[in-house]
Image (cartoon, rainbow over all chains, first blue to last red; front, top):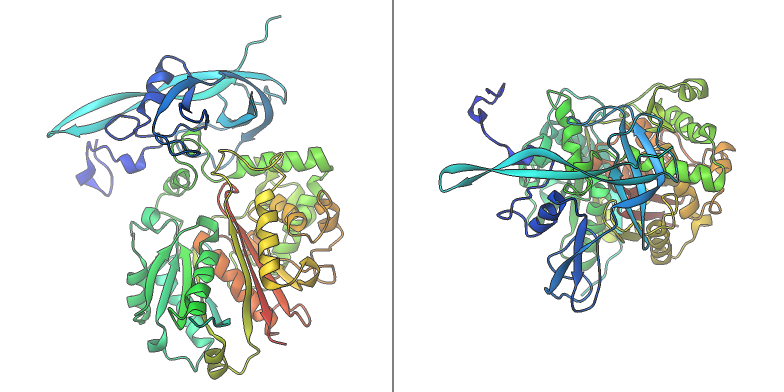
Length: 164
Length: 393
């Protein structure tokens, strides 16, 4: 498809305009986080030497500088501490209202995340939410003159359905 | 090594707003006003140049912009020429770094300029680019570009824990828009009423239109030098950089250092360090430019900077204690809410206003102001930056 004003970009993938992470292993040493996400696992790295479990994941432990890390699971459910509904100024690629929550994952860990599959005005403080994984557009990588497409997923959280 | 006292001696601004101009154009406008503010200074004696801009690489497709601007404005810095980026605090970072260069003797006369061209030919690109100004892979990908959602949570927390009201938020906007009404450089030159602010369309409840600073194009510039040189160049009272601080304890949404979103320990640390360095306390400050990116920000800044007790920011602003005739006049030129916020330019605009206040030549003058403070927070409340300026006795 032609790009108005910049016809030379026709059919090009401008990664500097990509909203999502360059998840492929060629560009990202925490590639495994996204592989785990594809299996609906929400993970981070744990230092095998000092036991520190930071989020987001690292390639080197920020406490002791060890490179000996392993992947561990984080909770995929949490409780809403704050919820906001953005009705104006929503970035391209998202619909209004764009809902965000600060979620208490337990163990002293909070996460600022988008909320999907949720109606306006539905979510309240104290409600339970759970991990939601969804497909996002693939990124493209040039390998020896040919283009490979890397499938990607990303995450948000969604309300846990209440049983009546 | 000699340690020299450092003075700010001149300031200038382009017109701020939705500009039919490039960042390079606006930098020239700001530099011209700054040069004209110190007629005895010869351009060729400026040996250091710092340009603060975050978005130039994005919305102007120009990285390493400092030599481009230096050439356009006709200076040849031989000791330092670089760009700095701390998003909303970039200009203040530049002034802190210039202070260090001059203090140590690594440079003698430094211009610190900065600003942004944020309005792109199609508006979507401006908002879309903002997902680059947070933690791209973790926050940007969640649709958090500009930080209104986080500051809406901040306002919710302040309302929940301290009983702050929407009317108290609105009082900040009414004051700052009144102050910008007679500022010819400001984005907005029209005051707003409490009724208009309260009835405005929502952005992210409880924040509505006038609770949020606008997207703004603009540039600003200041010049700093050592005290002996400043005395040679100007008959105006000298204004010294007395204390600085910049504190980062976490990253964007990750590992927030406070008990809740309205608890800003990184600002408390910055305030303590800056006050100690300047040898003053909050009661000594005569005028302050604090980072009113949102109305709730100015309220919390009053608390964490020590102008009032924690939790009392709402009644403090409602009773006009942050206004002329109150305890501490804040954002006398209109602040971010009135002047707008071209990120790298804001700390420099604040410095220019404090310079004018302490030299007794501000448009909205605080009578007899001797000590001034500027403050910025960056992006998703990720850093706090403070400068304290003092007029010579």
